[in-house]
Length: 491
Image (cartoon, rainbow, N blue to C red):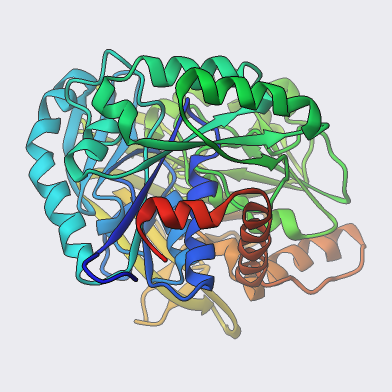
């Protein structure tokens, strides 16, 4: 690091959502780490129901968790101080520095933004004393002219911290030159000055055919293109996407996941995709259900609403008709498998009561206090089958009778449920399938039922590390990293 520079900063903004900001941020973090720098990710505001619980029991977006892994640092909520978790079209739960601040409408939150400026500035200044380089990710597009007044995540943050910006456009969607031009020209002059270069992402085809367009757009917006990243599919979790899951059944074991309107933590199923004889598909209506080997009811940010939706579209009856399917409920899905759910405090909405699938003799009562904790344990009566993960939920579940638990935690607490016929499972633990020994144990029980060969499960964390290195290699090969160092003022 050059003398006189306390912290080198670079900000990745995009022409829109899903252009690749998160993965390019992760790639740069891994590259800078490989080059010997101590690096950290930062995203002031994130909107996602895909969240994680830190060692401290704080909640943060999983995109910044992946970026922390890329930087080889432990995830901490300072990396994502504001997390918005939508529970409806206009309302969301706001997490501030890892803790629930309340439920707010979009307009209410917009009015709150200015008071977070001081906090954000102080957090970045705090990181100055701990790291060499900070890679900041924006959100959506900086050119949303209706949101610019109170912006704290794109140009509002960049101008406050005098941070250089790289603008990313997605050519796979089409119209990348118009997107780059329109984004730049909708910004104020001082904001345009902060953009030091562009990156074109997800390119397929002959680069020679693209070069004339790159030359023209450089002249039109007076911004140098720093690279064109080819389209590559990496087995890395996306921030909010479930589009990568296929609808067809291509392997011996068919796993169907109900795609709930308020589905949370779709990352729970990432590890299952690495099983060579497993197909993971999402179901959006009753006609798509079929007779899967495993049905997963996933987590939900609005359990009662999503359960009523299941009933309205006919999935409730279809699921109850399944006879040879193993059903696994995760968090909100676990609550749905119980007999009834109460929300007398209106934590999730106006509905105070609904009936569940009644596959587990259990009731759930929504409470104001949110449980956020990392956990470790093992399969009950099987200490060799380890599990680790985290809990994020508002409800407390109580059994009406004595049942068989699924896990025993390291602190001695019993957790989860397994039916006597081993066809119904439930747990509050997110990431349970990330644990290779439990994933192997569970899937091999299904393989035995189907009469197919048992298999050894791969280590998901090892694969994630390999893919982060591959991602860094692709970006390093196709982006001028030396110019990015120069933009940051680093040798």
